[in-house]
Image 1 (cartoon, rainbow, N blue to C red):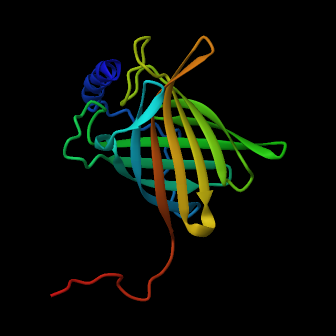
Image 2: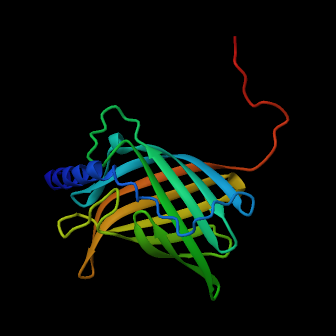
Length: 214
């Protein structure tokens, strides 16, 4: 536990300083599109766990709620994720309560599967997916200087793995986000987040969905 406390404290200091960095969002095209895409908005929550003494231990103070605006083009997805930690006892060792991240993913066909390469505000990475984008596995090499984690040989993680399951028929996304360190072929877990979200798509309403109640 002491090891985790020291590691998170160091990360928090760097994260707090990095919030003034305005180059965090890194879209690789200057154009802002609206109509030529299929847009899904995700709204969800996440449960936090830290790896301690060979097992994951629940830590409610690091839970967060999040929203994702996901724009799907023909072979490219562009997503912006915002998250906020609500717990009153959150200690800021993981950075600010509110954070924003950018993801741009390019897909290509590889046999009966899709492979992906992506550029994010966290780092670059690769992934695999089925043809309907139902189950995806993404791995990010966290870059040394990003707005959230300044990676060095002392940091207890250098990779992020995201395992996604899109249940479109139920309007539900379940996702596990894991932080771990990979060195000399050895993987050491650090933490994981269990995310659940419902999604919203473009549509029309017959009337105002809510009204002020006197």
